[in-house]
Image 1: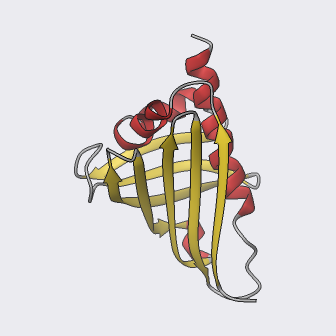
Image 2 (image 1 turned 90 degrees about the vertical axis):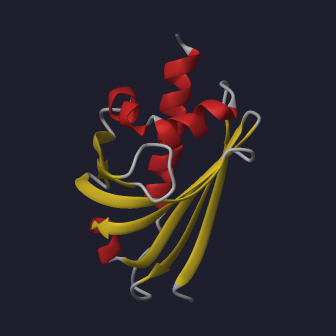
Length: 147
């Protein structure tokens, strides 16, 4: 087995995809209020929300443990409604040498793409993190659809 991997998950939503692009690019600070059992805190350390190069951090629960993750917004494509985060610090980098997550919105479909390199072959694929990312999409969709 190789150390590099790519996971892709697509889920259909009731709200338009632009809502999700907007949430993750310029309003991620709302996510802890929408999904407090999963995401406990969001902070911006450098830059401004919605701009490439901004550094943000999250506190969240994964596999029953509170985790911390710091990311840089690596790319934003407003036309394609796509945003890419590169992981730069935190608990997950103990398991992965490199990790990026891309959220793409197209109509009523949201796609997460995780690209990563594991520290060693004993590290599992980040399936629970992908599950968390999908759950956040469902929580945001439900929050806005039920208004």
